[in-house]
Amino acid sequence: MDANKIPYKMLSQDAFSQWLGIEILECELGRCKVGMTVRKEMLNSMKKAHGGISYSLADTAFGFAANTHGKYAVSIETSINHIEALEEGDQLTAEATLDLQKTKIGFNIVEVRRGTELVALFKGVVYRTSKDWEE
Image (tube, rainbow, N blue to C red; front, side, top):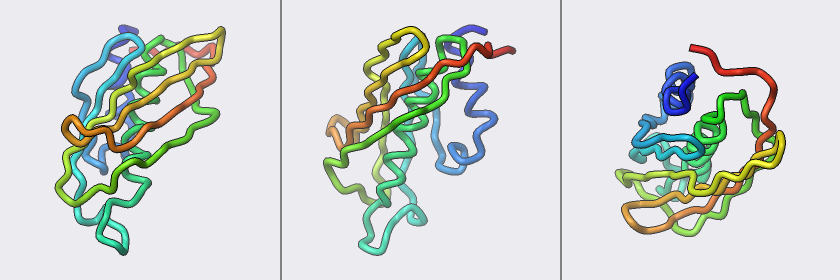
């Protein structure tokens, strides 16, 4: 399957990312940029976006980018550093900026931004299975 079609197929089957309102902005082999807007129901008790929101956005970009290589890639380790608090109405993007493959293991870095401001850094490791993505 063509690398840039895989993230669209994944999104069409991903109810959670759809609920978040995630849209694919750009994708190519080893790279994907997604975006979304923080909604009121995504806020915590302090009226800031729950940490899981930026994490989920980054995790989606990570998963989409890792799978562009044509094999099912599954997450085996992830982490995030939250740099700035997020507000209702913030428009966020997450871009997988680094894609490094080592045999069946892949490493990705995702930058989460509010405009040009870096608000979170995400690191992920995937295992690439032998199963191919099909049309």
